[in-house]
Image (cartoon, rainbow, N blue to C red):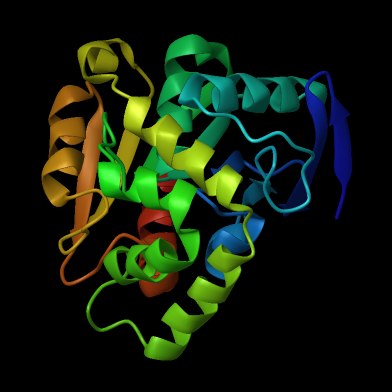
Length: 253
């Protein structure tokens, strides 16, 4: 599993699938995440070369974490150029979806299509989260986990997610949520031309369904799939269904 030196720092990523595959996918994780946020069903899609990044300051990639979506987008573009990737299908979750949208605006030549999971053209963040991440991260993290998953997700799965999030430096989490709070591309959605698939959970409490619907109506070439009863962490809650929806979308490109 390789590292890549880029003009903006050392990046860690995984890659699976043949280089000559019909589709190149780039998986971009959300706030406080890493390449581990993606299930095998997505990392090993048939007829696809799939890359999964650790964003700067996350997982094994070099710090610092950024505090803006534009900063993460610029870093990702540098990584794509350093690896000489062809135009890719960007698959982003939450903050990662915002990064994908920003790339489609700023670097359209790098983007073939978009898969936006738990996504919005804006990502409002409660001031309570930002305040507690600075003052009492140990208290707010369990609440973030509680808000992130659907009601029927197993408790042992939530416990694992909590342990992972507790390993993320609080300053990184704060920067991620700050970046999300500053993101708003509603006015520019009409300028995003690649085809897009939006996947949303009906019970998402981190990025409510209304924000995903707003995104769907604003993008010129979008379709949307809603998963009844699911929360924000669709890749963990409904991995096979998500992979199936992505496969169907790729087949139509």
